[in-house]
Length: 103
Image (tube, rainbow, N blue to C red; front, top):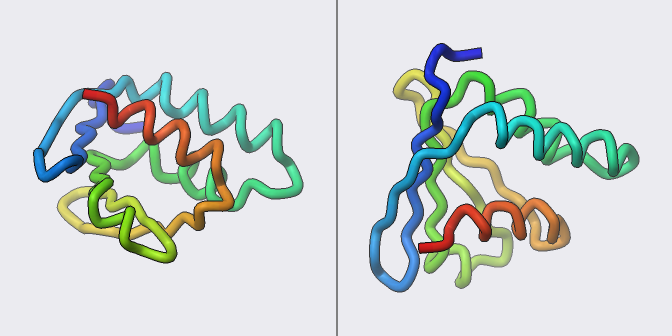
């Protein structure tokens, strides 16, 4: 796990940019719970559990995602940018991210 205890969490909503720091361990525990609780359908949570310990930043463009058939998040690891598409079917995952996107 990275030394940094916090993850930079950025999002765009209503044309405005926001930023906050998220506790890395807390986010990891949440998604580990989803992996355990939904053992038959947890590919996205498993992916998140694998990257949360090493990522530096997560970005969500709420405005852009509203126009997409398959919304996504962007995450950064050591300066490299990755995109993770998450279908709307994963309502719990999106509910968690939407909670982080509160102003």
